[in-house]
Image 1 (cartoon, chains in turn purple, orange):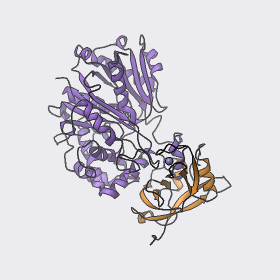
Image 2 (cartoon, each protein chain N blue to C red):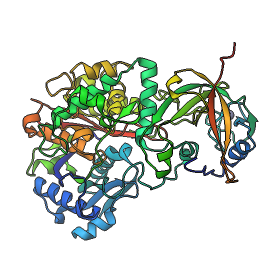
Image 3 (spheres, chains in turn brown, purple):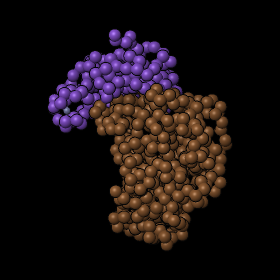
Image 4 (cartoon, rainbow over the protein chains, first blue to last red):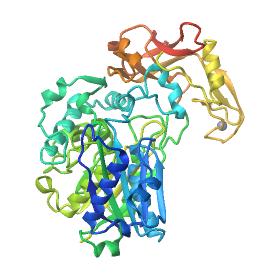
Length: 391
Length: 139
Ligand SMILES: [Zn+2]
């Protein structure tokens, strides 16, 4: 089951600055991030033959970005519908396209004005017309913080997970962001600050929530052989997995999650993800875990096999997730403190760690990284990558 | 009610029953399994045959939130308000959402017995929703 293992590589990474009001279009953000990623790789737009993104009606699609940049010929593109849960499948599908010989150089990007234009969960904008919304929205329930709060409460009920354990994640990731010049939030916070922050949807507070961010990020995917001839040390796509999620459908999938809110789709994709890369949880040197909320880190620590089910809270509070801990997590500060580009900035940070260029927040000797998408709640799937340095 | 229900073609009979203050689920014509939310096919035996059948309207609280953030303007008058996720007594995997009817959010706990209470929207809006009221546990 080695599948895509080590056949493709991430050869370049680019960012725009992160802000609360970019003042520009998502097309402009995409172009800036893509040009930066190509420059990082030592490539130009003339080398690009494919583009890939995901969006929820909030960004500029590949067939607009490509002619705007003057891409000579688009041989493949992906305009994936979906939010954070599909973020890592965009890079995985780009790797598939390269491995299949359909494309040679794919730029994957995500460009959002998630604070100044399209806020997730509303600013007067109605909820997306999805199947499950009709059973929830009449009760004022449709926003992501509410949905994750519901899961977090179920986890507290089942396993005794505490507010302080969630707070340890917020405080710890902020400490990492202090060492990241790109981070939106660089002022250290304490547990008292966390516990004093206002409720958004109990049991989640403001400091449990990621930062609504304007910004873009792009990565360049090409073959391992080609990447070896480029400017940066290649970071190999060693494993990739994605899949559909369970729901509150009675009788749904049900193994392992079904209608149990304390288990996510990550538990189902993790075995085939690790199998493709030929590694296990103990081999992961650094983990960038989708942190739309602190709780999503807790449940992924369990579902990706770093601790037993129910132990995610105590594990997070043990200090294990710090830069010098057993499993450094969200080394850039994550969406909670660096900024929220809907998944791709986790991939970009994993690349920096595996290149050894993460500066003050570098995990010494990091060779294998896990980077994950939103782990799935009602009607959502998930996706994840294992990346490794080419040495 | 902040957002009126928007039934789809599968769920319309469920919402019509709620409008009559009846709580129903689907019963598979192939294997007899009860299911919710509404959909045309059984995910166990794949039968397309089904009927709508009444349930008792009792269940137990599985999880809940207390919402404080004003995500939509009409919420401003209502916050903080709880939203419950309830497992029906007819089946562990029959889950329904709803507000709290009576009682205090501070009294919510895992497994709290509740019963369905139907709330009609004022002004003949033609919509009814299902909330949940704490009840004495069955013996
Ligand atoms: Zn059946």
